[in-house]
Amino acid sequence: MGQGLSCADRHGTGVFFRALQNGDVEVVRALMEIDSSILHQTTKHQGLSALHVAAANGQTDILSMLLDWNVNPDVLNRHNQTPLMLAAMSGKIACVQRLIEAGANILMFDSTHRRTCLHYAAYYGHSDCLQAILSAAHTTPVSDSWGFARFVNIRDGDGSTPLHLSARQSQPECVRILLSNGALVCVSTCSCPGSSPLHLAARGGSLECVRELLAWGADRFQFDSYGRIPFTVALKHKHQACAALLNPSSPEPLVWPSPLKLIIELHPDAKVLLEKALMDANMEREKAIFKETFVTPPCPFQSDLDIDSDLDNDLASEASDTELCSICFEQICNIEAQPCGHRMCAHCTLSLCCHKKPNPTTACPTAPVCPFCRGSITQLLVAEVKSHDKVDQEISPLKLKGLTTSNFNEENSSLKSLSILFGKLSEQNSGTCVKS
Image (cartoon, rainbow, N blue to C red; front, side, top):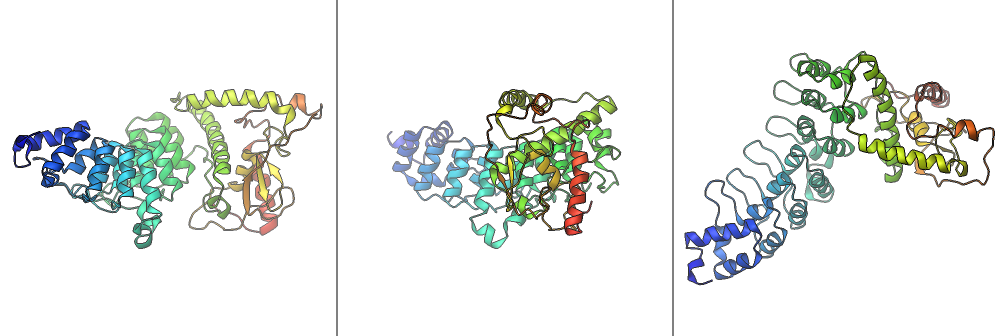
């Protein structure tokens, strides 16, 4: 390399940063060995250190090498941004994980928007980075000092939480992750116009974000600082499909029953089945709303629907060998209630848990009641599907013909009628229920 690559040489510094950006490990190592003080050099305009450049460009090998040289993982640029923030902005998940492993502080704020790495991952829609940061928050000093719930709902300089930012930027996957990790669905921004995440999703016209927020209990009647509800915001920005779902006169969606203890402690496999049932039920509601308002909405779940169609065909072909739900006689029994052991399908289980829209401030902790034995349900598990050599011929031709994962026709056992049934059973058993 020669003396021309000394850190005192301006040209050598330029070579160093180009090598960092391009991932040239050997050049970076050689320059560091010639003079380790080059690690303290920064770029002229942004004040980026070597670690910033490696993190922003996803150069994991170089980043690891720099960390092995004891470079501070929380070094700041001119905007007080850390390498972890830049990695989260760029969606460089390997760099995010390596920096967290090296002890990078996830609770540092920059000086431009006073945002953390969590804000940036949510804003730019990098769900894998978002999940990695949230996972780290469970085990870092942040969990001990701030508490996980406070971290998830941390505000930036404008009073926006990560959920506000992901809803504003139409990032439905990040919205889903944040909500499932305890993000407050109805919190308003501190600055004008005092928008809720639902206001911001309505403004951006993100039908998927609106779906997610409504399914987690977002209030369609919440006002912003100008006295507008999300429906009004969607109309103003000419997002007709979102306005149809947000119309106060349209039916309420089913809401994920998050206040219930058995839902909080739900097994991941059972959660997947129940979330799918919730989506199916609300999609049926949407179809009715769009048909009534003459709206032809985009179909963001088309690929999912194609997969579901294939799954439905598989289920129908195997229906004669499986145990059907004794409530609706349409779905396979895939959820088992504990401690009684009675089984039902995910759709009927969901209806049992959210027959009324839960209110987080008044939700009753009383467990739902099993419709078979009227005993309290304390846990929901994925049931092992039972097979039978023969199925009652009287049931099979009629009931199995319409076996699908999204069959919610009112002519059959609809969620609406099941909700009434389960509501009565719950009232008879405990005398209390979740208030709307």
